[in-house]
Length: 310
Image (cartoon, rainbow, N blue to C red; front, side, top):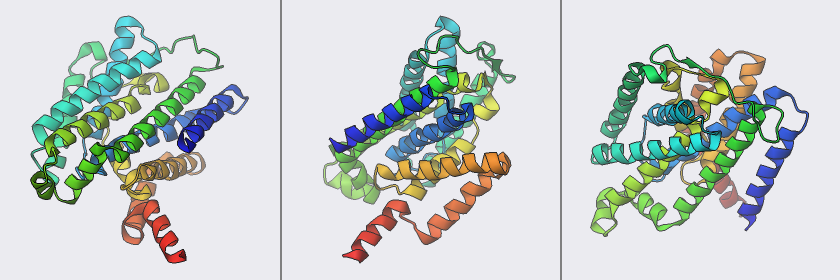
């Protein structure tokens, strides 16, 4: 009950902020931070709970973005329909990729997921309807519901998506799916011998993770009013999706949320005050610090502090 109260309060606060007279950049930057929460949470369902490190994040983000673009071009669909389309197709991609690659383990699985990114990028670059290699310039719809700008509305929509993503991750962690995935992470052979349906659970995790990554990417064309393959399938998404759960902690649904808030906010501050070129440096420094000093992330530090204070 407490979780749902806090979630509802966060959504109300996001809507109230969007209806206020706050500077437009707050919503432009806030969208990125909220998108980071969805990315980190989605990655952690497979990478954190099950221990399968997915470097193919840009592929799922790209499928979400280009699925949304396609339904916009074909049907002039509203943003929620675009997000739904992105989630469905990215989820199906996750299921397909899982069926092809989940028998691989360790670095072999990670390399296979990277290959998916390059394949999808090549397909999009040779599809004229989606803009090809040069991309497409888009015009945002004029209808923005109750808000003064489309950016403000997207901020609220992404806040809703962040709550949905965290809620799904929380449910997965506390359900039999999460228990089975933790068993897979600890020892897949032992889990198999104990009767855990490891392949089925991994496929479920792939589908859920892929769908949520698609949700993160779907609003991007309208957010930027432009889309092209090089930036959409950028491997930077894979790096930050991996970094945020490591910073926050991969063992709990709160970890990716904390990591995304820390890294996403810090990157936006650095972008405004210094330069956007330093964002990669920020990610690298934080990763080194947490891997060396706090390998279990912020969640691990909190647990240690609680244990030592007793």
